[in-house]
Image 1 (cartoon, rainbow, N blue to C red):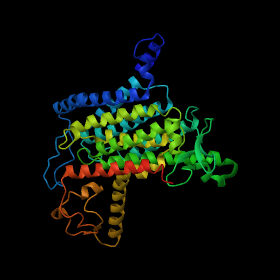
Image 2: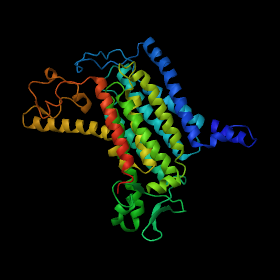
Image 3: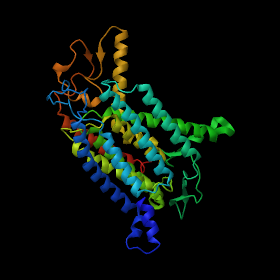
Image 4: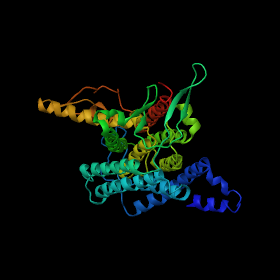
Length: 423
């Protein structure tokens, strides 16, 4: 809103109004505003929740060797993050931009699903929350909406990057002048750095373009569902999900900025995406909101994120990556989320396999994988056989686990950006 106001005032020569045309100015302003709102509103929200005795009920200290009590801590902290993101975006963003609209819809959509889940857990005293099939259904529907909007919107276009031969053996990356709808996405470690879903579906003959878009929509649904649930699993320790997500968002902010700048896109040999600079505003707001939330969520937490936050953040990360055509970099960038999900899947399947044989067996001491690092031997089931029962030796403090996961995510974020030049 303020963006349009000051652009209007610029016509009358109002001093400073031209600053609002700069993405860097609005992005940094969004970051600061989101951080301030998150810190201020967070304190108010926590006091309100405690005053009304609205707190988490299902966590306790049974799995923590250091005996940290996790009862009577308010949850639904994702509301703080959502409010802190939406206010700067509505004030500073270009609300006619299709990508900004998609991000706002994503935030609200998954925020509502997460809120319903937390509401059932807290107010209905049902620790299972919203049925998993309804969560998946909501994520699938969002993926379908995002995929179809990117398919049908005339504003969701790219300018393809191509290599041209110059003097001698020198090659230069240029972008086509025509803006087109495309099912291409960036893929690491290959020469031209692009993968076209349409080419994958070339066996469909004259219908390969339509089939390519169908594949793109299916990939969008899968990525949103997987990353959203991965972030949800990662939310199990104080500051864990918020810190990891902030780091991931910073990397996505860099990728979104270079994708919106034709010179940087040419240098990195990636497609140019007109209009994606507005994503930088959203991402900076998200980073500011997450950092402000960490003020209260860092160990020992005064409030938990809850599914209101974790489901939303995971979905936001997925949609951001899809919009800038970097969804195939997600396994690297969100490697921690992937590891959390795989640990749970492997643990469950391995346990089921042993159950069919009449053997009680597990791979890890506990899952998701971050819980494996804080379990002592006397907390393990003596009747169960563990593949990694001696790893690690002893238990790590929760804050140490969190910081080490942050460090891993920083390395993965750096590796993700580096992959653009390794081919």
